[in-house]
Length: 196
Image 1: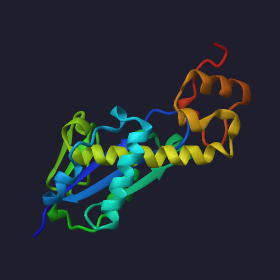
Image 2 (image 1 turned 90 degrees about the horizontal axis):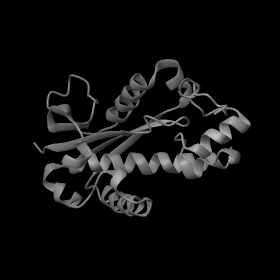
Image 3 (image 1 turned 30 degrees about the vertical axis):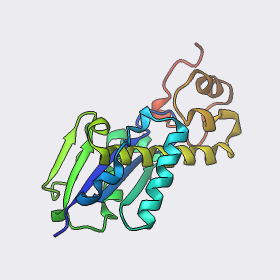
Image 4 (image 1 turned 135 degrees about the vertical axis):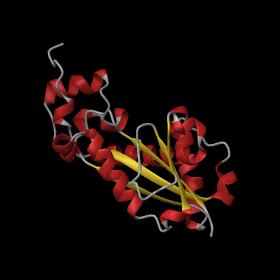
């Protein structure tokens, strides 16, 4: 029975707007050398992340790796909270993985956890630095979320989502102060003094 390594990471826990994204990245253990040199998405430039995604997409098209990204939007984050929303996205993405639970060693970043049916799972603090398969998940999740925020920026040009991707930069806060909240803002995250 072929064994698979699955890396899971989330992107978008802290922004004031937009979804949270979770990527589940699966690779046969024998193929893990294909990820040599990959780093945590936060340690790569946007250009490098795009280059990695292009390489990973080619590997996926060749059947060498598999990944799935799931998003949970701002309304559900406001209703249920960020941690349950991340777990919902994780479950959605994990359900799409083609391999049986017995074939998979699951590695999760930070405070994430998989359903208990995945007996072989390990949560690793700063996992993107220690497991290439988690780093790969972080890159895919980051690029996919960034692309989504760039697309939505066309609908809401006054907020500059294409630049800050929904994070609470000074420019983003000023835009909120000037224009108010739009449909993709997380209202529960925007309780700051907009008069400062």
